[in-house]
Image (cartoon, rainbow, N blue to C red; front, top):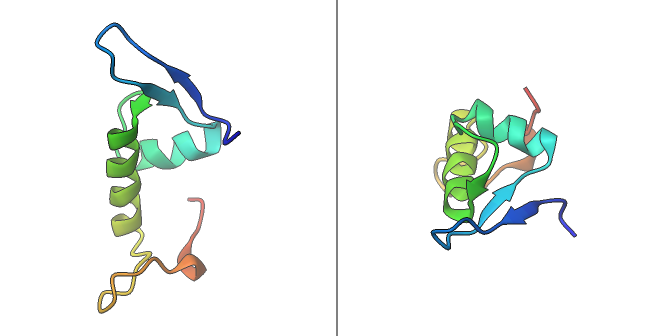
Length: 70
């Protein structure tokens, strides 16, 4: 339902292919490929949040008012 395709490679780790706009965001944060594990998605999403300072440094909360798509 979230528009993410999943594939299970021989190693058994599930990888996802994010929708194009979300993939663009992840690649902006350094994601090197088009299919990622859930842990990789979380890692690169965290890097994006930090790089765009989408959080309050005192409360460490995400601030949706600062979100921009590049």
